[in-house]
Length: 272
Length: 267
Picture 1 (cartoon, rainbow over the protein chains, first blue to last red):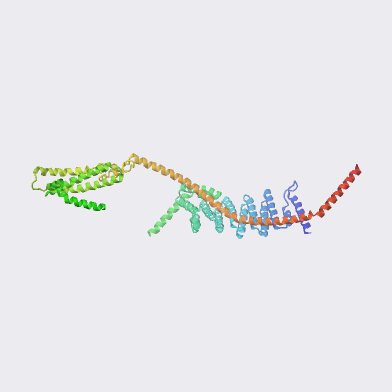
Picture 2: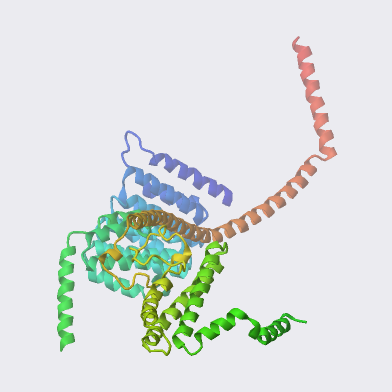
């Protein structure tokens, strides 16, 4: 009995599937109803999730962005019901990747949810790609502080799964992003904070960062360019390398003046 | 009898028979009360021995012994030069029974002595200060190395670089820069390798739990497959039981019979 019911449902869903294919008379796909049947036909959440994902992919082709987000979220929930967090986060990531150009904020929200899913489950080593994607979206949107924040979160995740090299690279990338955003003080603060961590303090990346910061303090443009072309920076992610190559961003001279003023103030203090 | 004993015996014998040594007695008699003459004779004999040593040094093949002999000659020369003032004072003293011409001659002899002493070859450099300041090829032999050979004349010329030394210095600089460049390239390559290796390390660490999962799943799939195979084997064996086989053959014959009958009917 159950088998016949199932077969009936599947046949109905196939029928609705034909409805979702576009014809001359039908300009938009009747997805909502189709998906209900999809859900019922799929007697495990796993299959339902798979179907949701394919629904989402088709919606991407049709550029129906709202539906894309919905479908991928629903798919991720279904995967979660199965108890499989990795495919859940993968579904969210796929949706977010599709939405990167059209709706970047929604994409970022989906990426963040994907990260939290994996981190809750203790699978930090799979989040690196997601963090990389988030950072690139933020950099494209020119929201550098947010990008730096996420880089620091990346470093925390890397620390949890003992990926020390990635951790140091994330710290250096954060410092470079702050410098690109003309925020020298933030960059210095970030560097000082990160130096509390032993692994970063004794790494190549920290030497590179200190060289870069001292070059900024002395307003030495050639030194800045030389450091950005060094091999340590060239091993970071490509979007960070692009930022680093553009680094001395015009306000370097001002920083020198500031430092001189600071120096004079200190001298006066010392004399008294 | 050891060598030491032979030497002591020979010394004792010589001392005993010294009174029969004519030349020695003559010398002793001649100098007698005259301190100047005695000292002068000693200096002369030292000069003679020094000259002999210089000759052996020039003929000697072994560099180390040459150096040692030359050092000894220089020591002797320094000692003799110290004796000269003493000799001059003694030359001034009036001595009984000495002719005035001989007295004047003594002064000249003393004055001639320093030159004679200096003239003893000791393997040293020429009296004129050499413009040193480098030039490894310039110092021909080790024996010519002298401290204070220039008599303290450290003028500008002394520190002038010779052509050889400046050439050497520039060659050294070029080689050093080339080595530095090579080392820079090696260092860059090593940096890249290190970064790549660390990234690979992390990636492999990431893959390890995934591989473990795959391992478990494949194990499960293998056991499932084995089970299914066994069940299938049982089922097929059941299907292939001889009873079914006979029934199949009989039915086949029946069908063939029916076909043959129809064929006959229709023909």
